[in-house]
Length: 455
Image 1 (cartoon, rainbow, N blue to C red):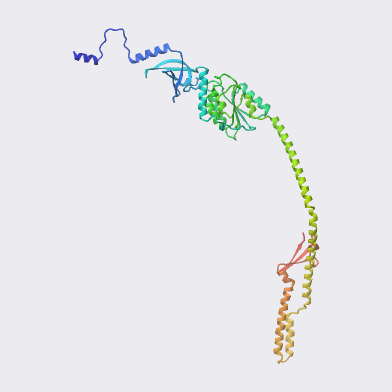
Image 2: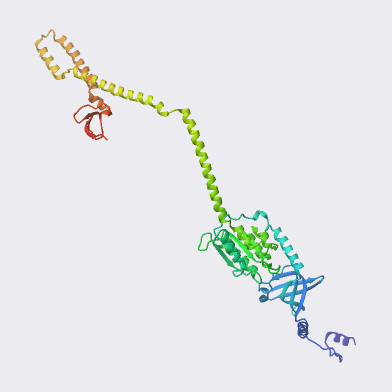
């Protein structure tokens, strides 16, 4: 009996007749799947996103929760880009789709086809939390703000090319101060708008400073008014980060004066309207022209006053110093007197030296020796010794006179670096006044003569 009970517990035995059907795991999984999909083929589910990630395949997996209940959800790759919003943890949303089961894990999940925020309150809450997050990162700090250029060479505009916004901006720029405008066309609402706006901001910043397309000196990101949902692309984190990273000063002009988006906090300046952004981008040309004229007049008056003050100071200085010509006249007269005296002194010195040389009547030593020899032949031998002594003294005297003659000779003076200047007739030139330009003169040096012309 025990053996029979053991065998019945180990092996399946045909059950007693019953109405309960028998299913395999695959069969029951398929039945549950069909039942769930037929019963909940189109549902709208409201909940808070507690987990959200995008797989490398492009599919998005998230979890909706409410209280202690959770619902696994999936949004396929082709539908993610059509959601029109970027899901974030903590966001309260209403998802539209269908329920299905996942047999591999015996669970059910929501296949999301559409997603929307659960009312304006949820949207505002989400924006406030996003603002706090970005502000904590320092993206809205005043220290990051850059000053706008006074007069930009080129203005870049990120907006829709077909709306009234670009026309308003161009019209306002034309009235104030026309400047070249580069428009980067983007969608300003709907799916993909945020990505296009961020790409445009980064695209302008990527332009080289000197190239075929001139890099703008200032950017304007603009769109007209609309609902909170319409302005959502300008609240997206990708757009706010692109605005904060922009190296080009950026003006945000999104919506009307009462509209506020997160890009306003990251931009360098917020304008209430697109037209106001154009006004902040450039000055008024007529005002600048008037200011230039006014500054020119003030500069001219200041220059006149400065010249008048300098003239008065110069006049007072002139009166205090007296006439410089009167102070120079006595000095010029003394110079003329010294010049004349120097010329006369040189001439007298030259004449005295020349007369001394001419009066000396020196004889050649050979003649003197010859005469002495004749006289010696006529005297006796007793007086020979005395005559020798006399001859020696005479010879020494002759040598001394020859030496003096050599020193007094004009040729000796010329040997010391001087030159003798004579006119064409051989007269000695002693002063510069004796010469006029074009005169022919002769120059005598120690080693020769040369001719020259006076300039």
